[in-house]
Amino acid sequence: MKSINGIKDCFGCGVCAMACAHHLIKIRQNEDGFYEPYITNLDKCNDCGLCSSVCSYKADDVALKDIYTPKAFAAWSKDHAVRRKCSSGGVGFEVGRYLLTQGYKVCAVRFNAEENQAEHYIAKTVEELVPSIGSKYIQSNTYEGFQQINRKQKYLVTGTPCQIDSFRRYIKKFHCEDNFVLMDFFCHGVPSKLMWNKYVEEIEQKVGKITYVSWRNKFNGWHDSWAMAIDGALHGTPVKWEESYNLLIREKKTFVNSRLSQGDIFYRMFLSNSCLNKPCYENCRFKYEYSAADIRIGDMWGRTYADNEDGVSAAVAFTPLGEQVLTASNCMLIEHSFQVVAAGQMKTRTKCPLTRKYIMRELMEGKLTLEQIYNRYQKPYKYMMLPMRVISKLKRLF
Image 1 (cartoon, rainbow, N blue to C red):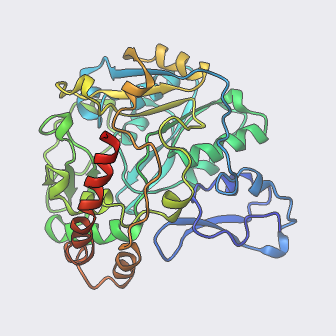
Image 2 (cartoon, rainbow, N blue to C red):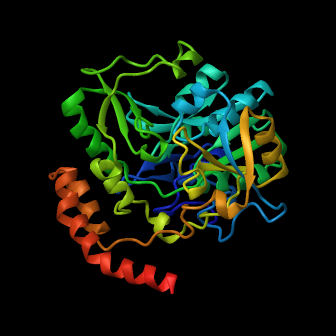
Image 3 (tube, helix red, strand yellow):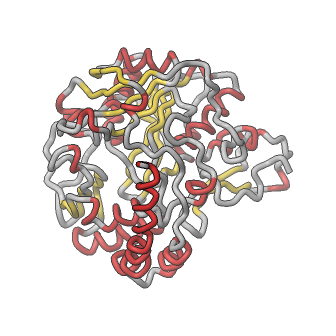
């Protein structure tokens, strides 16, 4: 068959569902807690192959060819309130805010506390864009957001590199690239929703039903920003996003579970790479300078801005359109070499740890806490691998 029928453990980008003229493709979570497509009625599928033609998972290259020398910048919002609220320098928000003034809509990602999921949605105003602020360290459900996109209208679309690569294939296929600006980010990988669900279950025992989550907060400054801030029904005031853009400025009082990545079990699980999606280990080809986006953003982790605690974004323009948008946005831009801007970012996909299959099994069974799972499987593995990491580092030095 030419269709995506039978695809398992893919990127879960959902672009195939957009492409299907008969609306036969839906997205669901597999047993590992990751999104994947399925055809609702094979009898009605005419096997046209359109869904496969936009599928990044089935391709073996990057959708954007080398047509432009990338321009790399250290960047941050000129609006102090935006910079303070965002995970790093606020460039993603400023790009969206600028394009809204140019007649674009924004297909971005927000956390839906009611559904306990990250999801793509359409923002038509600055107020509606506010929920997209901040990093979301779980896989997004693209289905509803992508289905609302009209190819004849203008959009900024943001997402993971694999989502954006498929989206680039889609707009090329339908000859509508001129209507879109695409933005991705330096991606570590996406963890299983099973892990996030377990984390939420444990946190809600302390704060009640979660009403707001911020994965990154600069309570102690940007370089110490691996903090999880959570509001629950028993703690904090529910966020009413529709109120105003001025919500950016409001200083929220939140339940702060941890101020360091080492101290929060979600970040320990995430950064251990022990429960990422299978393609993150096997099929990711979008690390470092490989992207199908017009703009790539992230944290500028290198030494150049080591003393800056307000937050500095890494911003890379991969197309002339990307450079034009960055230049026109309300951002301070300081050009550097790509190597300086991308310092600290992953250059290759991570290797799958031997512990993954055991950890995924425990997450499916749901009997142990995340702390117990980590201590039983990942902590011993971490110390077992330490000598190998030291040897590897010494080889690189000498």
